[in-house]
Amino acid sequence: MRLFEWTTHALTALCLLTLIVFSAQPAAVAAEATYLIIQVPGALSTFPMSINNSIAVTGYYITSPSTAAGFIRNSDGTLTTFNIAGALWTEPESINDSGDVTGFYEKVAGVAHGFTRDANGRIATFDPSPQGPDGANSQPVRINNFHEVAGNYPWPNDASAGFILSRTGTFTVFTYSEGALYPTGVRALNGNGDVVGYSTSSDAYTNGEAYSLHADGYLEKFSVPVSGVYTEGTIAEDINDAGVIAGWYNICPFSFDCKTQASGGFVRSSQGAFTLFNPPGTLIPPPVDIFYSRYDSLLTAPKSLSLNASGEIAGSYKDATGARHGFVRNPYGTLTTFDPPSGQQTTAVGINNDGVIAGSFYYDWNSATAIGFLRIPQ
Image (cartoon, rainbow, N blue to C red; front, side):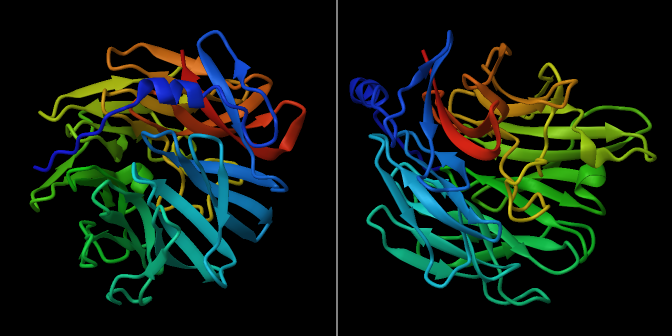
């Protein structure tokens, strides 16, 4: 197992977090946290997708209903935008601690290709070798601190395989689904090279099984241990370097539409022990019901749950009125809900090792433009 160590310069970070963001908007202070706004000037909407331990954020912004470009917001508030040459849609998905970014782009709508952008701005594009019936496509979801990339390799008819791209450029493509027409989805990659996601024998929501693929090739498949006469789906969403996994599960009668809700969240220890939890409402599994992801698919939707090194989990839930709120759950089970000041429809997409959460929301006076945020715990 490889170990990765880093030092957090707490005093520097604390100073940086007091800075004004982008357009002279002051930080908003709530009782439990400080909020910073992330908004690309002139964008129709701004969607953070990932945060690293230096408090750098990457994501994408909408320039028209069919076009998007990427952005990186550094810890000092500096904003950099970029686009893959000739692309209609560029969507960064993950940023590592060095500032390297991965994601996907489209020059033709519906045909995705992978890219990496290093901290110096150099961009490389890639696809796995054509193995599926649709040739080469790729939708990366995570880049770790060793510049390894993991993601999805979609095929027609909602099928897919997973892939791992090594730092030397070698692809490993894999599928664990029971049937060629069903997806194997990749949701996360940790610093040790372990991958988690789900595989299916039909629909991922109602018959999905989670897996953990270790860097040495050892595969574990598991489901949340809930008994009953219901169809169950288990989706692993994130894994930290200690091997702790966070995800969600579904239990519903066959006659119900399981895609509208998740039964709850889970934490699986590195020894395989499960802890189940619920926010004060319905946990929101991807795809979320906002203009947030390129596809109505688990492959590219933002994470419903994100996990950091200490075991804190960030996510979102829907209350009885249909309003969406963020939450953070500490390793001891205490769950805190939140919304940015004057915010509504909050979606949390990432949490770093200092507990800083990135996501998006809508102002209660403007439900048309999504705004990014950082939530800094006090």
